[in-house]
Amino acid sequence: MREWAGEDTQPIPHHESRLPKDHPLYRPRHGRQRTALVCAVMFFFTPIVGLCLFGEPPAIENRALHPFPSLSQGWGFFTALGPWAVDNLPFRLGAIQASDKISRGLFGEPPSLGAGGSEVAPGATVGDAQPHDTVYPKVIEGRDGWMYYGEDMHAKCQPRESLDDVLAEVIRFKAAVEKSGRRFVLVVPPDKSTAVPDRLPDQYAGKDCAAALRDRFWPRITSQAGAVDLRSTLNQEAARTGSPLYFPQDSHWTFAGGLLMVRAVVDTIESGVDQTWKVAKSGPYSGEADLPPLLGRTGVDSTDRYSLAPDGTVDRTQQGLYDARKVTSFHTDGPVTGMIGGRTTWFGDSFTTYATPFIAAAFTDASIIQEGALEADPARAAQYAVDSDTIVVEMVERGIAPGVSVLLQPAVLDAVATAVAAHPRK
Image 1 (cartoon, helix red, strand yellow):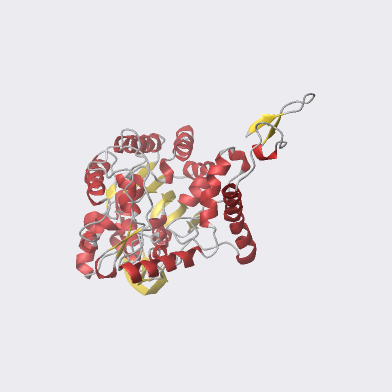
Image 2 (image 1 turned 90 degrees about the horizontal axis):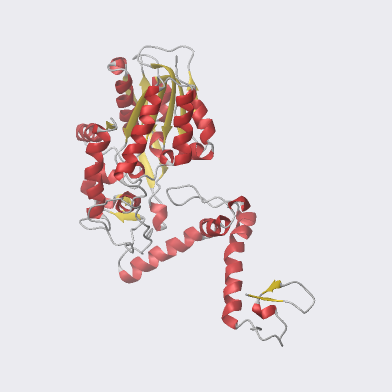
């Protein structure tokens, strides 16, 4: 682009192709420029047409769709427009399915649908780190039809923050909560690749560097931050029942895993309060598995639901999966033995979803704020924390170890920590 103006006018910006043909800087558009311009317009406008005709496409990855960027983001509007357009392309799932069938049919191997690489944060030691151009598959296909979320490896091999920084943030947050007179509990569900490693293939991208961070993370998060470590409890229950507590084709655990987490948190808050609990199977559950769609396929999660009677008599479980973008609150005016009293705010991620029915049964007054609602309105989340006696924080291993969890974002962490510090409990 050049600037050109007549003799008696102010300079006006023009593209070279729009200058007068006799101007020395005139350059006509060539065919490739026009083709590129047409392709760019089609790429960004096709999602808009698709939205008008077919509505919002379903999320086929283990995350929410990228929102349409705001003009208030400045130049960030243009950088955020690309991810939005990719997420909202019509027939995207069909393209992934076609890629999967062609790759397996012609070459006998799954397609390369990797998440790509990302920059490692300064000072983020990752042991035997993979090169930056390593392609991490979105799904790792294991033995016996098991699938693993590739982000388990990618996030730990190329962390956003160093482990020292993550620990410092968690400890600072814990200190602010406890200094304000509130109870604090941190619980970390292990990644599926950590809890059920025996179905992983012998080799996969990120195997060594993910293990390096994992092996440094667990001793430090438990000893320095006092996190509830569920690994041995999950292993014991899997051995007792003869079945892992994670879905074979999903990145999450089952309701049994969520129940074990709630029990461990309750026992941390008030040891022995769960002695009166009565747990029973309450029927089957079936839902869409989240990993097969990343390969252009479909899969089903099947497991048992459970009921919980905290006093051993009345089932107080609230069945159902809840919207992670909204705050979910439960309250009872008639608390019974086996329940945690006072107000509790539970900050969690998608692993909390499978614990929600039991949080409703075990706490007399609980508000659950998952990552979607937490990121959308940190100030509102902070107010819930201010009104609480107990704050529980649940962050899955792949979220906290590499520092990518929403709660660790400065805008969120600072908002909650500052609010509770300014409003101590009397």
